[in-house]
Length: 63
Image 1: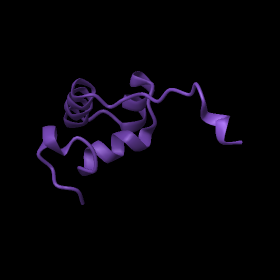
Image 2: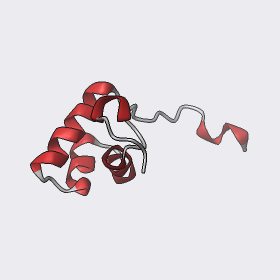
Image 3: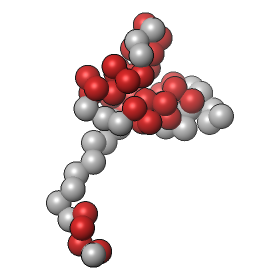
Image 4: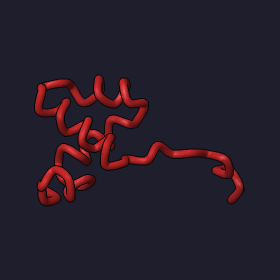
């Protein structure tokens, strides 16, 4: 069963994507709309918003 995830690709949160997320959050877009448009999980948007991911770009410290 260890080979279940072979070939599975995850979307990387690149610096460019984090910047796009940050801009859209500041424009007031909903997290689920941003996630759907970028094809990523809404949880990743939340992590950017709270500083758990991308803090090197946003300047936020993890909550």
